Length: 166
Image 1 (spheres, helix red, strand yellow):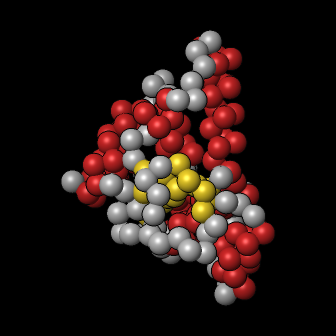
Image 2 (image 1 turned 180 degrees about the vertical axis):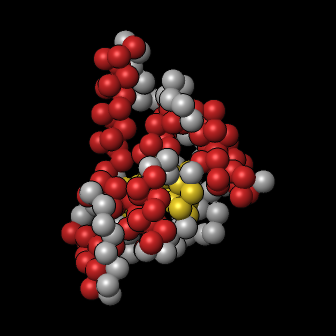
């Protein structure tokens, strides 16, 4: 298991009960101090780091993070430097490749078993990842949380996760 930023080939991935799936909104809350849940997200990041948790993140999240960083540069003129990701995200993270094998294993197989994740594509990926590995999904997206729970994924807001672990 990686304790850094690595990409998986998905099938050989081993998870532990302390590992989680983080939605991009949670990662952005960690990274950008002007977001409403920044303080809670930093507490979460420190807690995950202290536990030695691995945050599973689909490769798709990179696009969302880069887009968010570009937006912040446009809005406040302060780009997020590439080196600050690891410093500001003190937990291990494991980037899961999004390829045809992912689609087959994480989306088609559950659909064939009657488990349909009724969300837009980007959000669907996070729920599918949590479902496949039986991990808690931490998100601030209310619809994603509702659908995740409908398909059997434990899903929580940042504050709920921290309160549950206190």
